[in-house]
Image 1 (spheres, one colour):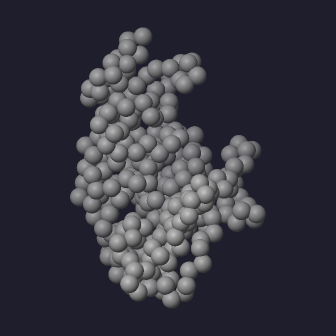
Image 2 (image 1 turned 135 degrees about the vertical axis):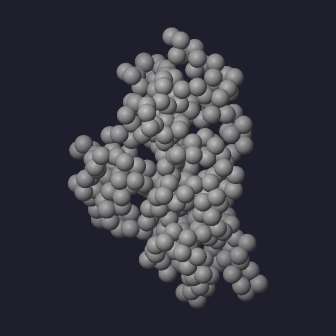
Image 3 (image 1 turned 60 degrees about the horizontal axis):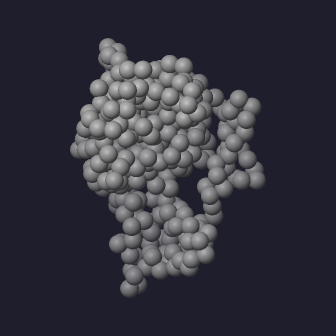
Length: 305
């Protein structure tokens, strides 16, 4: 078809995308950019097309982005990209243009909202301007948790990655302490300086375009947090309290979707390493002032140390 041919040309030539149909009155920029074509199994989906995302979960790493995406995917009007796309932060991807990015999106119906999540976007300096140039009206989701806990989760993930490869990895104390002081050069600490990274995003997007999800509350009591996300994305209230159940074995909430139960991967919710209480206090003290600046920036407080 003509649409297929046009799609092939766009992807090959990396030309700026031309909407495949006129944007509806009042539609947000980027909403109408689509690529119609065949599904992965070769069968043409009925009236479906790939759309540039109207919502991106921008971070933060180890903040609960996978849980948020899985919960959001319970909504019938949400189509989520399966993998972290890393379009805006990896040069080898960004250099391939929006045609490549569009090709990473799921096929969706015209009424569905396409969502992708790449947690590294939040802390990557070049990303906000690049996202803005694609769609200044996009809605952004940012899930944050206690900065000290996030640091420990960050370390834990890398530690287990090394264990699985049978590679040695230093203790968390070796990263956190240098010459008897807190090692402020440790990258995991920098990722938890939320006010620094958010200021970069606020240069391009007003705060009303960024919804901050309380990651600690999402784990303890997910339904109220997801309701707020539905409202922010202007989705009809379709996700219910019955979609969540507490799994006593795992120690966190799992999802129930149409009679099918599913929990997050076993790599999620791993126990953190034991840290000396004095060092933990140093960590909490270090984040006290940055947290205060963040609370001022967003006009709300969080129940963090």
